[in-house]
Amino acid sequence: MTTDTDLPLDGLVILDMSQFLSGPYATLRLQDLGARVIKIERPEAGDLSRSLYLSDTEIGGDSTIFHAINRGKESLAIDLKNEADLEVLRALIGKVDVLVQNFRPGVIERLGLDYETVRAINPKIVYASISGYGEEGPWVKRPGQDLLAQARSGVMWLSGNDGDGPVPMGLAVGDMLAGAATAQGILAALVKRGISGRGSHVETSLLEVLVDFQFEVLTTYLNDGRRMPKRSGFRSAHAYLSAPYGVYEASDGFLAIAMTPIPRLQELLQLDALAPYATDPKSWFTARDEIKRLIADRIRAKTVDEWLAILEPADIWCSRVLDWDDLMQSEGFEVLDMLQRVERDDNVSILTTRSPIRVNGQRPKSTRAAPRVGEHSAAIRAELGL
Image (tube, rainbow, N blue to C red; front, side):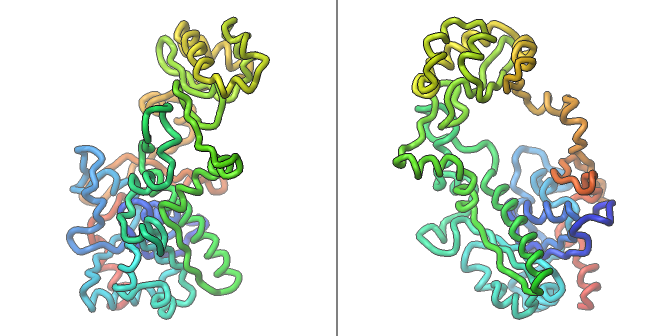
């Protein structure tokens, strides 16, 4: 649990009926801000992400991803097919502030725990639903899984080089974005409740957040004759941005260069071959592959530090490309204090990340690891008098 008792959501109770990543990510963000999160899990088996392994590493019998996204939460084991357990759940619904669920559309209605039913129990509740593709349409019954949502969203055609085919993001970006959007919606609904006393139903889906994620480039597409974006064929980093935007290999690593006028780069790189393009800004896009190849050949001649010593004093937007080892050893990362160790009474100890949000200059810190299945069932039932 958090050590700072003055966090913004201190005293707020969230019932987390979600699993995998999107819903648990939303409740993790709110837990970091002081909310108490009670996670509903199937007896014995628990959240399916307990066995969703990213590697062959497990801690205390559960996957590292489960630990990362469920730290600090409480676990109440509930059999949704057992009427006595449902009575406990309904009693809890009557006392909480927020309920989060990410069942496939139709499932929550069959369980008798849809928004209208829950609102009859607790009129002030903020109820949040996350789905794969919304509540209607031909994709509703399709699996709401991150890779599949990426595939349907168009986002795979923005990364990689032209000719590579679709390139998925290297992490579950749809789940994370859906969780973040849900947390934002919940906070807005809580503000409304504070003003009007009324609860709300907040909804989003993986597809909706992935479309929103692309708002900048989609707006260009929609207002530019619906021309499809064309990725650079060499060192592509953005489908719509001109040379030199990209990542280049130096003699000892990689250098990222963002938006920079070609004449200025020609001068700093001492690269006369860029002269034909210097006075024709349109060519920075139409000939971006040719320009990037010229830049790449030049960048290979020096180390990253040598180029940074030339480019950074000239206010060129550039950076060494770090891997995780580099990041962890950097002063820039160390000063943020983004890591913490969380523990459990069965000797589980895991090093993980901290909240990205600071409140009054302080970053919230947790000490409690993710719970065992049903670890808090007895205490919560006693609290409810059931």
